[in-house]
Length: 108
Length: 314
Image: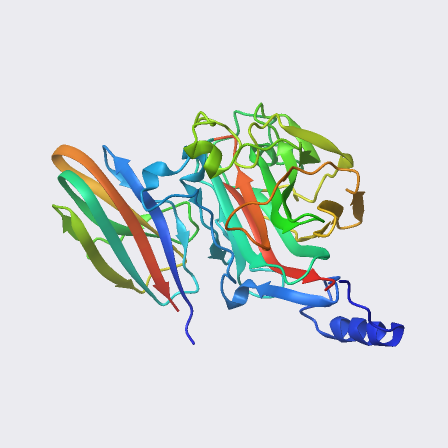
């Protein structure tokens, strides 16, 4: 059977500004799916995955990601990533406040 | 009840263990309860969260954000993939780059009988590579890495139902590389026999919610293990890993730690006092083994486990 793992990178955490999640090692995985369970949101942000060869130096994968403008469960898939992933959540101009979970679901 | 193999059967058992390349590096008791090589997944080493009824606001703050362990290829910026001891993946505990951060991994079992339990692992530890020098400690001299002083401590703990009168006891051993003042110690300590850090204590208002130790009421509630000075092979940089053998044996029939071994260094724990409570609802025959990791600095700390083995004498 294939391996799978769900990492909870943020767990009902509140942010008042743009943020990135902790790095997560995913060299073993073939596919990833991000889930954002947004409980509260004042403002809007874009969630963009970032890639790294070493967990220290990062670049965006800008064509993948979603805009989030309200509470609810949001999700997108990602393939062809390297050995490390993290998520950048960048607020638009204006208010910035959210309470959310960030899940990274991996299969390989 | 301890296993009672004949000498011939015991010799055969040892020969079978020695002939298996996965097991021959270990020294298991007669029955292997769990063997994890993390090339096959995380093996049930899950993180901890404090007790709640569905509302995470009920969780004591220090038990709220315990970072889970991840499958790591042990990669570094200067050499690429290091790999594990004889494969690609190890289990990696990783803190945030935050001096309040902890990471945990816990194996949750129950016991069929009372007796000896042994936890073995091959492990190594590192602080994350930093750039631009280290303001905290000594400079780089080509031999000793400043990053060694950026690693805090890791803890082994068991939470067990046992003893002659069904008590709950919690043994905890801590490898203190540095303390919260940044002093390098490289020694083993044990948790003093003081209780009071449970979720029940927090819900009852007996904890203030700002303690600095996940495993004790305070980072001051620890004492030196006799002959516990134990410098390890940090190997000069933040990006070279050398695997160390560790074996910890405790006895659920006497509610005592027995022995800690790191490579050739054997420490007798039979006189170490153990925190003990009376029977505890909902934990009948619990046999939990936990590993946690803490950084004192805004630098991620990592603890890598190549493999783990839990064995018993029943």
